[in-house]
Image (cartoon, rainbow, N blue to C red; front, top):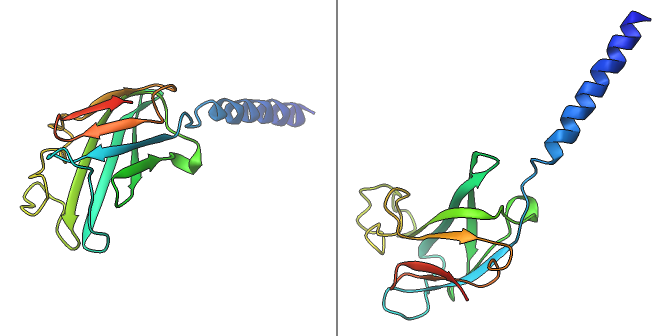
Length: 150
């Protein structure tokens, strides 16, 4: 009888922990936008010849959160988040890297299109506050070195 009671209490604790974990699930708005190049023109790249990486870094429940956006050849992008559930609202740093396929993604990569001006987490000027209302129309303007909601 005592073992059955301990088992029942243990199961209740376990169920409570699992239920508590569901509140830690990552969710939020899905992000869409476009990139303006350093010369003011729409961003573009050569699929198959260049590798474009657009990453967002913030926090979720006090823990680091990173997500990679899908960038189209016309400079539009979308970030649907883990399991297509969106991304948490909050402050983000953004890095953008454009490398020829096969190039090493290191600080010494001389072939990175923007000389790593936007590709280093410590020095990127691209920061913004994501809210539920501005998530659908972000403009990453490399010429002005800003991210704004349109």
